[in-house]
Length: 415
Image 1 (tube, rainbow, N blue to C red):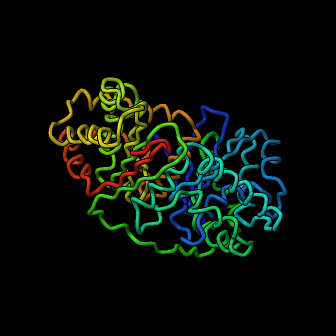
Image 2 (tube, helix red, strand yellow):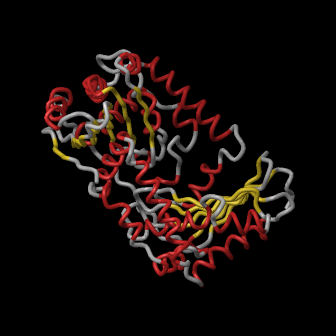
Image 3 (tube, rainbow, N blue to C red):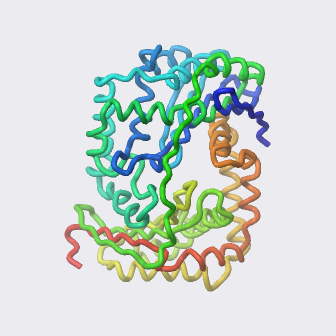
C-alpha cells in the first residue's frame, strides 16, 4: 500500500507527499500536463523540444545538471502524447537542491537564441538518427497518420516533420513555455525520506511565489470510430518485410483497458506467448513478432508487429495473424493461461513499487488521469479480468474495419 498526502498551493500547484524512511534517498517528480496532443498541428514537436530546453539554463541557475550533480543528484525526463515528466533523485538531506532547481526552471528559462539553436539541433539530429536513418525508424511516422485522421495522436512526440522544429522561433517557444509550464498545470510529487512538514515548507518556500498562469489547454478533436480497413504499402532499404496491424482500443480509464493489456501479453509478450510459439517457432513465418498497446490516456492502439521470414509473402503472414486473433473470439482462454499473465503483471507492479522513484512517477500519473488511488488498486483491475471479458473485448476490437495495416516492403521485394 502506497500511503500519500495531497495538498494544493494557492497558485494551483498540486503537491503529493509519500513518506518512506527505509531509504536515504528522495525523489522529486514534476509532471507537466502537456504532451504532443496539446501542440499546434503546424508546430509539432514542441513538448519534446522542451524536454531538452528544460535542462539548459534557467533564470537564476546557469547549468541545471552541474548544480544537481554537486549535491549528489541525478535527473532525467520523458515526453509522451499526454505529459512531459521531469524527475530528480537526491540524498534526502540534499533534497532542497531539487526544490530550488525545479522551481527556478518553472519560474522561467533563460531564453536566448543560442540555447534554442543548440537544442533544436540536438532534436533534429535525434529525429534523423531514430526516425530517418535507421531501418524501420519511420514506421511510427507512417502508422499513426494511417490510424488517426483527426486526433493529435496522429504524430509522434518528436513531431510530424523536421521543419516544425527548424522553424521554431524564440517567441513561439516562450509562448509555449508560459502557457503550459505553470504551477496550475503541474503535479509535484515528493517521495522518500522527507517528512510531510518539510515537504509543505519547502514547496511553499520554493514554488509558492510563482504566479498562477491560467493555462489554456487547446481543444482537439475526438477520433471517430474507424469503420473501414485502412492499408498502406511503403518501400525502403530494410533487410526484411514488416507488417504492422493497429487496432483501435480504449483509453487509460476505459473499463476494457486492462483486458487489452493482458491480451497483448497473451498474444505476443515473450517466448511463451501464443504468437511466438505458433507463428515464429512452429510455422516460421516471422523472424520476430510482438504485440503491445500504446497505453495512451485517450483511446489508443493495440499493435501487432512482425518481421516476415525470407520467402514469406504478406498475404500468408497477415492471414496467420488474423487466424490467431480470431481464435480469441471463437474460444475462451483457459483460466490457467490467464492467471499466468496476471501473475507476471502483478510481479512487475510489485517490483516496480520497490523503487521510490517509480512510486513518485506512479503517483503523479495517477493524479494526472484523475484517479490517485489507482496506485493501490491497479492490480485489482487486472485480477478482475476473466476469460469471458477477454473474449468479448477480442470480438469487439479484432475486426478489420477497426484496423490500419502497414505493409513495409524491403526494396528488393517486387511483390
